[in-house]
Amino acid sequence: MEEQIKWDEKGLVPVVVQDSTTKDVLMVAYMNEEAFDLTLKTGKAHYYSRSRRKLWLKGETSGHTQEVKSVYVDCDNDTILIMVNQKMAACHTGFWSCFYRVWDKGWKVFGKKVFDEKEVYGDTEDLQ
Amino acid sequence: MEEQIKWDEKGLVPVVVQDSTTKDVLMVAYMNEEAFDLTLKTGKAHYYSRSRRKLWLKGETSGHTQEVKSVYVDCDNDTILIMVNQKMAACHTGFWSCFYRVWDKGWKVFGKKVFDEKEVYGDTEDLQ
Image (cartoon, rainbow over all chains, first blue to last red; front, side, top):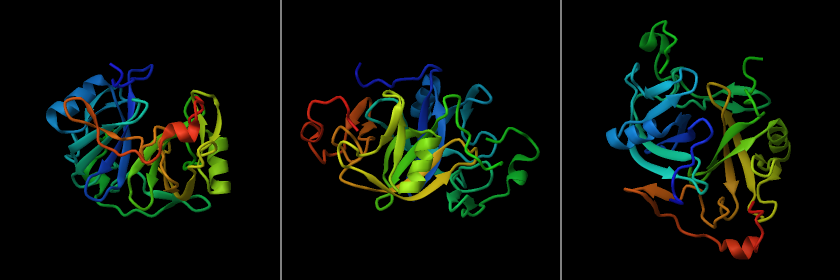
């Protein structure tokens, strides 16, 4: 079918995640077909972690889940956009959005911390 | 430097492009270091075309340039977000955004055409 998603050579596509209320871009992650299907089926954003090489329910450790409101595909069928209701914050560093640094002759932090990542995740490296 | 961009094995990073007025996500493209530097230097979005394997000034054919208002990097330093003032429309298909199809038991077009892509690009395959 012409309109099918074009998974890349690793079976993945990038996914832009936007908050449905503020329209802030929260993060970019990757889905494989299983993550895409689970996201549609459960209404909660699932991704494929390239570093940990496994399926990942966003918020499985932190509780900061993403309730999916709508799912879009781009003209090339190789990028997904999802609109979500983000619980607490998207970024494992404690910021609302992963894009908390802006270019101003170097990267400058402008976002505000929403939670203390050490309290949420402890000392684990499993920061999702 | 810790805060440097992490270019992937092909020397690229994905770039999310958001309209600064509407906050609509317009497209996702890729930059190499040259495109990134030119974008900062000129204030107009430049990308690297993976299919054509060359640097690309967005709007060089169509005139639908993107005036860059701000540039962000994510927590992992491997994804860029830019806020732009989009002339006319972002998508080479004539839609305002490349994300003009939403999932509803299949992909359904919901966006509206802003321009006639055949008038703008003629019969060229060089749809940028």
